[in-house]
Length: 400
Ligand SMILES: Nc1ncnc2c1ncn2[C@@H]1O[C@H](COP(=O)(O)OP(=O)(O)OP(=O)(O)O)[C@@H](O)[C@H]1O
Image 1 (cartoon, rainbow, N blue to C red):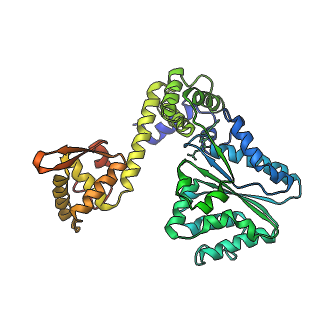
Image 2: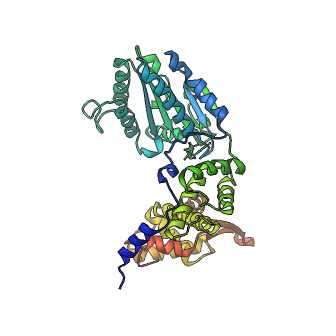
Image 3: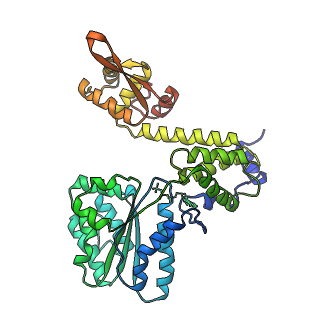
């Protein structure tokens, strides 16, 4: 009898590996050539150029839809500046943080502080007031006479964190120079949300967006060129079929040209092809990859819902196409079965609108003559997906 582990290991050893360098398909990889972004590279460089001449650049705000190369361009410009200043004696400190990866404002400031070499003793992970944390960051910059550039990716999340905690940190960050006597602080904010500024305090807007650069969307042809470049570097020759490439470009380029989605699709399709011992990535691998990525997204979003939202989703699954009233009575029964107190119908009606926003269910308003109107809901995802995901939840596994 063959051993299943050995079989797989044998296949992997003797099997075809069509991806020659996986790292190149990772989102942190910085390619040598950045296509279609000449103007943007020039604009970002121009804006940060003063630092090479030992003066403080303006704060910069970079906008654009997801996957349009914002982070890539900013990182590349900064790494080139870094290379040059390392040769001089001018102490520049580049600090990068992604707001989405931090759940608290404190966490974000500490992550910036660590990159300024502030140790736990000087900047503890918990316990200080936000204003104190901020003061210590500034002191470090001042004492070291550092010229710090804080790159804050997904800065709209930082704005939300700030709104939640009611602190004035964004304003203070943009005005930090007024408090510094020796060093300087420049802020580079990156945002996907073009309307982000409208939500800010007007005082913050003027100092944060001293300069602004907007990244335009890629079209399908541009996405295709970016993919071709990446394929040359990461796959062995002729291993991605032309129709497969076209489909990836069409899928990722459709709405606004998301290069990240394109490269992710390419990687997943390549991995599927390898797993199936195929020596080519075909259009079927791309379809399968796209479906898999879509399912992962749905699964993640289902798992992130709190318990009562999950119960409402199960109620809709059991009576697909039902009215709010019917869903509510089913939900009440489910609460009884799992031994939880039910929420009010008013709350559940509101919850249905919230879940609708996530795109997992869709609602249709039905007019019932003298009986007024009601909304009927149905799932936009398969009930199998709900069953599969909620089966892992101990409270829910017996009712799905
Ligand atoms: N012009 C390009 N040439 C080569 N690769 C690119 C180009 N634009 C984007 N990419 C690649 O696409 C992926 C996404 O790019 P990046 O992270 O810069 O996008 P972004 O605009 O910052 O997106 P988000 O706002 O979602 O963070 C990265 O892997 C990046 O290397």
